Image (cartoon, rainbow, N blue to C red; front, side, top):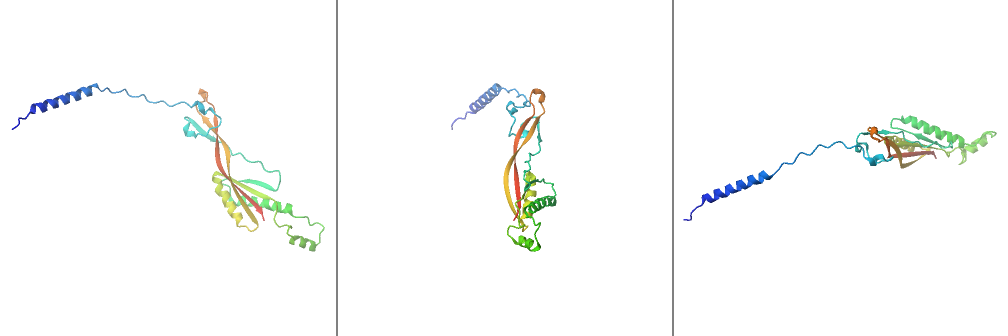
Length: 204
């Protein structure tokens, strides 16, 4: 029967525990990292036009400017009608109709000096008072696009009108106001792109 060596195993276990205590004693705890401080506004944001959002700039807020409006055309044959999300629907319809009726009256030939038969013949001509060369342009941006679409759908159902719809993108400038102006950082600005819908209404 082979002799057993329990003392050997006990000695080995003792050596292992000793080596583990030595290795643990050599481990040192690193000091705690200092807490970070909020960074000042970055210098490269001093550009007058930025595409960054306000929440990426510490201590700043956005002030939106009014959308730039196109100048009304010099000709009375066309009129720009701007709509917002809160503009009454029938108010826009009335303004469009008023512009179309105005162009229709300007397109009608004069009947002064004509007798009844001549006036009737004039009404039956192809180029009589049918149609007109005027138009009304309804513009809506952002949330007002839905209102402009409803105007287009309404005039599409009118038998005497033809409707053209155009989509485009316009740019507007927003101010990025920095609160830490005492450090030499003034107000900045950014260009924001928004969708725009044009509805052109003409008489047939």
